[in-house]
Image 1 (cartoon, rainbow, N blue to C red):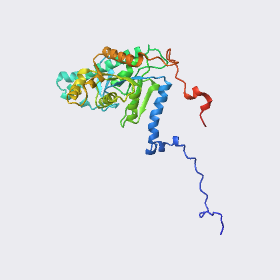
Image 2: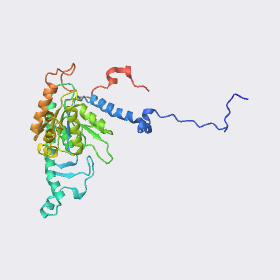
Image 3: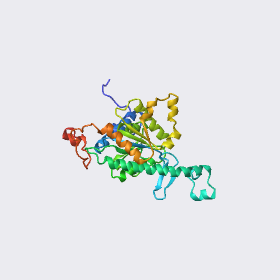
Image 4: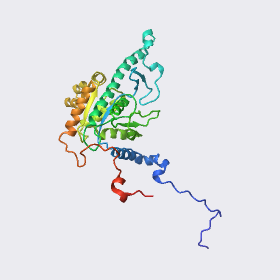
Length: 332
């Protein structure tokens, strides 16, 4: 018997293509087996970008995404179909126009929307002004990295107002957007290099909390409530290795939405938990609270690290390769 292998078909197999590299294999990366890599990417990529753009810490603005300012001059808003959505809500859900109110044709829903329109325009402009005032102040702080950078969820409404105010002041501003099933876009006022899009809500929340030294909560819905109470809980349970200043903006709105005194009365929270945040009703008042908070807990008595004295350099920070040289040159 021969020891040589004899193919039964007499046909040679076709030449195989090279297998894709694991980190270039889209099918693998998008699979359940690649989930841990996707999560890690949403940690490593923002971290690298923040270092590159010399971001030290942030002030986060939360608030409603369902309204957007069409123009400051006409002070007109329109309701969106869903949070972050680019599509308008149905016409019957839009705020009543002036002619509808005068003719009596407006439904109760439309009349209520029209009243809310004015209120939300007020909050939009307040968020815009506060972000501008805060950024003008932070840009005067010495150091080699940007301090207390205005950060939002990257969408429309209050988030747009915050990024817009910081942009108008000439400062950097961050947008942490989220990929959703319906169409949505980042607002145009985000610094392009600091425009992020996340798949995982929990990784987006991580970056809201990780760099934040202060938080401003404007009127909003489920998303705003979720984000506010998560950070309040982290602060309450001392899970944050820092003191964070929390401003709840619009006391008349929030005291109707959440009865904090009832939570104390029923023993759900401690009386001292009410000291975790402060109410503010004007941009000037909110800016004062923020400046006092971050100055007391982040600036006073904190000596600058070596090399941190001076102004922020114009260009991006060098990468690890640029710092360490050919010892970690990329492979081929």
